[in-house]
Every structure is written in C-alpha cells, then in structure tokens.
Length: 138
Image 1 (cartoon, rainbow, N blue to C red):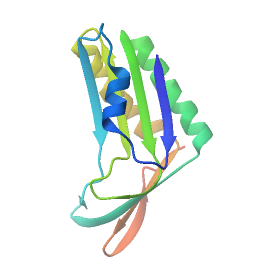
Image 2: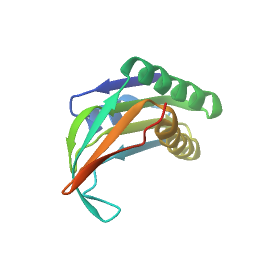
Image 3: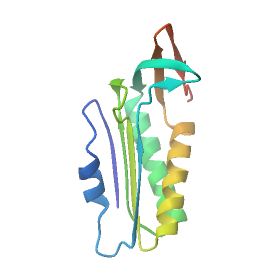
Image 4: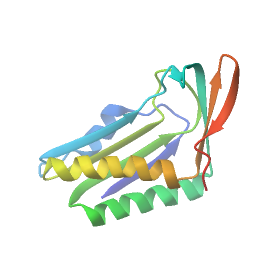
C-alpha cells in the first residue's frame, strides 16, 4: 500500500508516521528532509521547490512500486513539499513499514536516493549573496 503526495502545505510528520503504522510492522523507518542553514559554507536564507507535478507524482509512485517489489514492505509513503521553505522546514518525508527493520531501512534510503535522481522536482538555494538551482534533473 502506498501514499504519494505533493503539496505546498506543511508536511505533518505524525500523520505520515501514523499512516505507515501496522500491527504487522516490526520496523518503521522515516526519513525527514529538512532545510539546513548552510550549504558549502554559504548561509542559506531559504529554499524554493518547483515540480512538474503530474510527472513527479508518477515518478514517486514508480519509486514506491519498485521498492515494494524489491523489499517485503507493508506500507510506503512519499510526501514532498513545493514552494518557499525556510530553514528548519521539511521538504520531504519518506516513511516505510515492514515486518523487519532491515527492509524498512534499505527501502527508505533507496527511495530518497532515487527520488533525488529521477523525480522532476527542482530546488533553488537562496543565499545571503545570491542563489543557484540545484538537483536539476529530468
């Protein structure tokens, strides 16, 4: 079972975690991406995320489907935020439940690594002294 979502609204860690809970789950792994205050020694003011939403949702679903095929997962959630995010805010949550912890850990790490490589979501870093687009793919 999967739950894929892109929104300009705040992401809710507790709701995401609650969604993957299951009596069969012996392990739940949650990745929470946060906006940090420095990149390569530069002060980050904010991040701006844009997405080709229809394709991004499709690619995120592919990631979830592939993860569920590779590992014995019970549930997988991938939520990503778009818009302007301040330092400390959450742009991405990936939550995975499985009967055993190893599958949850492996699937969660694989999912965030794959998302960053394949999903058409672009990030602009805004610094004290300028800005740059990063993670520009598809």
